[in-house]
Length: 85
Image: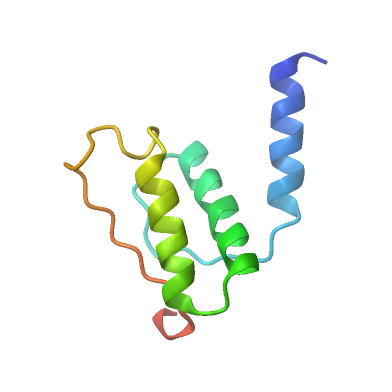
């Protein structure tokens, strides 16, 4: 297997092991959406409060150049909680 195939298999296994995540609206492409799903699962595992989960995800996204292509110019709104269903 090539290195790319191994990375895709590893990503697929990670995504299959995630609990169901409902995204109401997302303007990201499929690769970025998968990355978001992993970020959400990681943040939910580390934090109990919704505000801490949202802060963790937002901080990680702001530091990632893939999501922050124009630093300071793009605003990402993020809502985490059970009442948003």
